[in-house]
Image 1 (cartoon, one colour):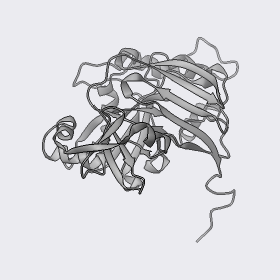
Image 2 (image 1 turned 120 degrees about the vertical axis):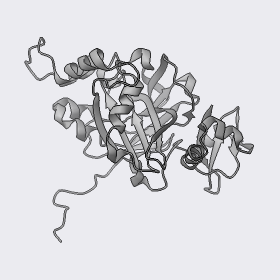
Image 3 (image 1 turned 180 degrees about the vertical axis):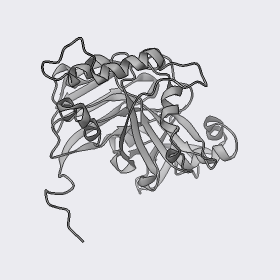
Image 4 (image 1 turned 90 degrees about the vertical axis):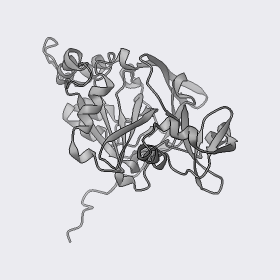
Length: 331
């Protein structure tokens, strides 16, 4: 089962079930978050709750995508109550690229970088038996809901950015119930846009490099995640495909279980505020940056994975930074 959120031509919000070419609109439902909270309160699964809703024939899915009217599949009306975060070095193919990025000058190759040490901990202890605590992964903060752009929209890249790098990956989408319990609605495709040139300068710049816009969707996939997933990440420049590569995900291709990654995020009590939304990026194994590609304004990213329906596409545009030097005023 796959859901989308979208806007009508008049700007009214709707939730729709992706069934065929035409969306089935859930009557009277305007928010995936409220739909999920209602399911929690009625003690049934999200899929069961969706099936219980009245539905009517809606617009053509392709027309919604082409018109830019598809929203992220989960959000919060107050963006400050949506936390966007992620974990890295979680996939089998992710360590070599990060290790190369973080080696410094004449560093002895026999000495492990922090990246490789973190990856090794994941390989050794990231897959504990269910109910047990495993190795703690790398974790980063990306922003609140204001840094999420809708599918099809451009990433606003700040004018001080040194790189415009895609990170194709899966996201987990969550709401916190009235009881303070996190509930996973499902998964979506994601592009965790980052600045890899900045990160390569020094690993301690990782936190800065992640403070960029991102996107996920267009669809929320409800239900268990397949153990093996193979998708494609592309960069288009005009009518040409500049770069294309397969990416793998799913637990068969990860050194951490999803349960372990979720535990190490939601173990923090401040992330359990009732009603909040969490969007968590699970990490990537494929980067165009590793192949020497430098994206530029006007390029378009495309992340596709058959099990997740329509691909996620986003462009790049340059925006001004928040303030100029000396822009903070004493009060």
